[in-house]
Length: 352
Image 1 (tube, one colour):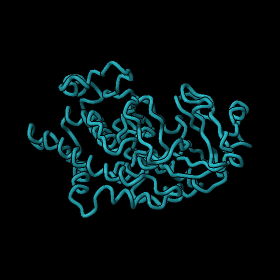
Image 2 (cartoon, one colour; image 1 turned 90 degrees about the horizontal axis):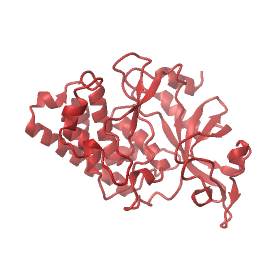
Image 3 (tube, one colour; image 1 turned 90 degrees about the vertical axis):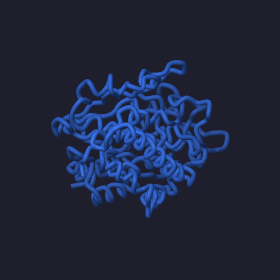
Image 4 (cartoon, rainbow, N blue to C red; image 1 turned 180 degrees about the vertical axis):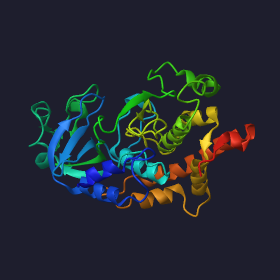
């Protein structure tokens, strides 16, 4: 069996892969080194993404590098107009693993030669979008809703291009799943706020009273997701993936993290509002956050170590790593507010 197939067999009701999985370690090496035999554009979406096929049959989603790591989200840009970052996908996979969730498909960085590894394999519609820039670099832009034109082209240096590779999950007839609209979805409108942004009792009155949030693990999964997104700074969580293959009460799948790690000195506190409104969290999640706060190693240290062997290291610049420590402190501050208003047995789900 290939490592891709072995990975599929490790997917369970509660996580994508077990802790310290050698299969995932080998799979990441495959993604970073195996020969690419197929390139196609993922249909839909606002930005260009490619599906790569490797010589062992594995598939992965490729998100290309658009700008250097130290370029941040412009202050006047809305979350829904920001470019996706390949390093955010890689760092988010490591963060999800470090937090103990293991609900994000494995992701790794890779440098590809556009002229040799992509150009001979692409379909005609994508082929005709290739060109040589005035700087002599090989570029292409594909076809998508918003950012697929000459002014938003993906360019090599002059042929080499960095990107992230997220492993492709099994087809839906094997891993039955569907996207579900998040109760804390943003308005995606430059003038209008979502209901949850203005109603402090939104969780109590609108979310926790209806299935599947009024029983079982779902509300706690969404609190984990809010913690995760706050740490990365990702405001673009409009849907989450629900799994049906393993029956009711399965863990969520964490997908699509390209709009994280955009700002180093700014924390978007609305991302953590679900936790403040619901005031519930898994004890295991709290304990892990508290261990990052008290040491001996902080979250920035553990993340730096976790990403140290990625082929395009350093994945994140130091200011992004330091921002993780600051955000851990702020999350613990929110939990402290919850404990001031409620008894611990109402705030914590003892899952230890």
